[in-house]
Length: 255
Image (cartoon, rainbow, N blue to C red):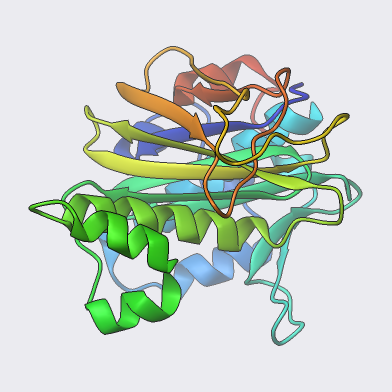
């Protein structure tokens, strides 16, 4: 069982090749969603993402992957089966998932959690759309680069992770961790909402939260404070785990 926030990034193939995993771990509503996907590669991405999310929920709660109470509800329409994932019976815990073209990421921890992953070669756009969705300061920073594409992609991933985490509650702050996984050619970000025991530092001071690469995210991790994310006091590390690390928890459920 984990008590702090953590994230896992993997390729779809890596997850589907993990022993003991398969559609038998999914709930009926998840299987119905899978059956409705006609593109095999996208179906594999969704399956791998759902399985990775269940492994993260199992590590967080100490329960088997098929008994974590994983569910989804859309805040817009109020219907179940889509929208932000959550754990029934664990209101203080958060989970999040993302998938894109053969890549999957999942995250879990106390409070609101958001994660996003994109292929490193992808370029978001067009600019008129980005201006409506991304902070102006980040757009200006990206424009200073000869090739603004990579900076715009990182800004997009950060924005997606913040959106998935949801607005922080009063007295809480967003703790942003972003990293590039060179081996998997991926860019990712995770936002964890934490309620600090002391006063958060101003954004212009170096953040004291840490990101600890564990095992094999083959890339670099950085925890930052940005105009939209305050720094969290030390003692709230974000672990970046390889997918194989999740197999040390409860065994997969019965088929």
